[in-house]
Image (cartoon, rainbow, N blue to C red; front, side, top):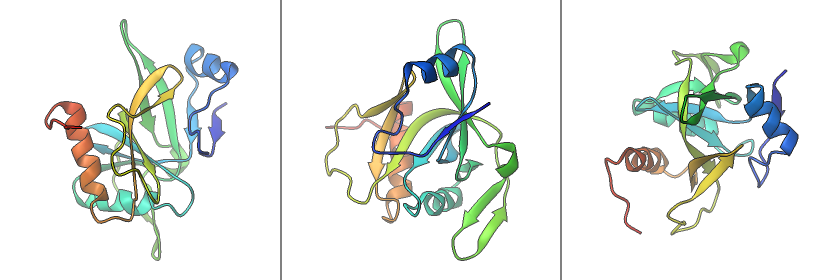
Length: 174
């Protein structure tokens, strides 16, 4: 059975039992997040209801991103011989669906899975100069994060720049 939670100020607070279940038994976790893939890397858009998750996803899709999941995302731990990573995918019941406020729910192409590379925490007033190594921890895996206002015109570009920084294509000075 999947575990589910709605984000709070501490988006990924796991109990020891949660971590044991999640990592030892490889059970997926269901989180309240819209997920898109940019350059084949998953970006989880996390925020309260009305924070702009689906709207920002729609603008990222217009810029070439791919939909993974809207509103809820399954997170699944993946192990290799030397690393742990997390995959994002859509719950089957909502795969390929996207809510477009004012229009309704539409069916669009989607990708089945993507490795999680970034958490975009949607905040009305993010810090002007954030910490250089800002991250969240899911279980024992550090995931880079960015806080931004989803409704700013530059929000999609900021996420793309952060992905390019993570890939080493752009150097971030601060």
